[in-house]
Image (spheres, helix red, strand yellow):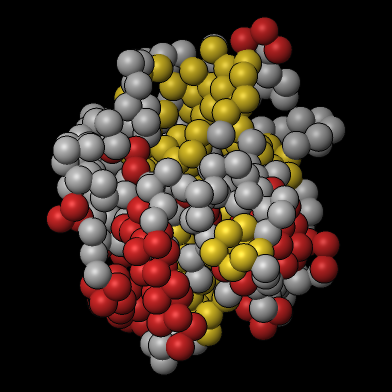
Amino acid sequence: MNKYTKWVACWGNATSITDRKECVYAKNLTLRYPVLMCFSGSKLRFRFSNLTGTEAITINKAFVAKKGSSPYSPISITYSGNTEVRIAPGREIESDEVEISVCRGETVEVSMYMADCTQMNAGTLITGPLSKGQYSYGDYAASETLPLDLTRNTNWFYFLNTIDILTEEKNRALICYGDSITAQSWPDYLSLRCMEKGYENVAIIRRAVSGTRILRQYDCITYQAYGLKGETRFPIEMNVAGAETVIIQHGINDIIHPVGKEVNPFRPWSDMPTCKELEKGVEDIYVSHARSLGLKVWAGTLVPIYGWRTYNENRDAMRQEFNSWLMSSPLFDGCIDFDKAVRNPENTVSFAPGFDSGDHLHPSEKAYAAMAACVPEELLM
């Protein structure tokens, strides 16, 4: 009897608008992303996204291969039997099922090649010990080794959105939803914690975009990379096979961004919400949709901002009021107090020593590990 009967997401990111630099097109480019497998299984399938693109893109070829296998044996990823796929702007596409036997703890490499001029507008910047990609000039998608002189590392993850695995019925996905705090390292440390501590039945799926807000979004090229507002993002990003729970750690950018048009024409004071508006946004946009999907919903408190360039006591008072609501509201199945995990117990509005990355908003790597460590075991068992 086949023990692999259930499709579960084993890796995932959000798809957002990439930073609008002078060059937004690429040609004759290979992208390669290594993925640590959290489950064993018999098949994989891949979702590629051009959600935020304004032009169609063509992926001429894509492969999956086990890293370090001997011999190195890349398997073509196809779409209705075709090795090439065209993805219209605003669309996502799922590949055919790929038969490949993988074991928990192995690393697979997903490589794709774009021959022609391609708009690189759909991708997400993520960091962490498990989030390291590469790109090469030329067609090396099927090569075991990328040429050193034509290759660079990247933390921009373009087009590859989700990997599902056909695995055991007991396995499930846990979604981590948020902004730059979640786009950075704590979900990777949570994945490593699961691997190290033997939590074998849960995959950590990151759906996070730096700069995003619950209630607003930017439509100017200066800040487009700050992503879509919650109402637009959330229903798309909850498309996660086998998901049972979502952790939502979001809202700090709603509080810290507005500065007034006289300071920044794109950040008016009218964007500043009340705490009640943030609470209503979480309830109406996030919790209601998650419940409609049958998901359990856990909140995550907002971490300190003391010393950040737009910090003032009023903003921090709103952060603390919002945190108090997150911890006490009956809307949630639970709340993870990330703030308590990283703040200074002797000065609770600031990070603990060694836990500030240096900008007084984003935690350090040590702090991200502490955030991962405070996630309750009941979410990982």
